[in-house]
Amino acid sequence: MKILVLCANGIATSILMKEVIKKAFEELNYKGELEIDHGSIKDRSPIDEDVDLIFCAKNFEDNFEKEIESGIKVIGLQNILSTDEAKEKIIEHSLNK
Image 1 (spheres, helix red, strand yellow):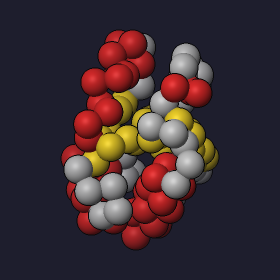
Image 2 (cartoon, helix red, strand yellow):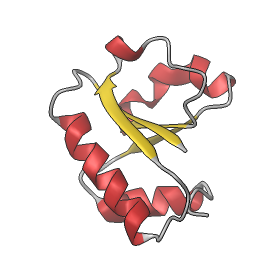
Image 3 (cartoon, helix red, strand yellow):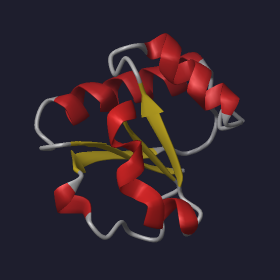
């Protein structure tokens, strides 16, 4: 699964979120292959078609209408540093298999 973790500037927040997402998948014993990249929302437009999933802060979810229409899942986190919330969202979207 190819995952992008995006924030406004692609500097600190997306790096921290990337580690949270990676840890969440590990704690859920995800057996598939993961490719997790991070960056800024503005520098990642347009999003590559081979991306399966985008994680971002909850307040940025509305920036990805085109990606959602093309079949890319977008998950916004309220608490970007919460591994528990990330795990809940992964399970909620059946991505832990």
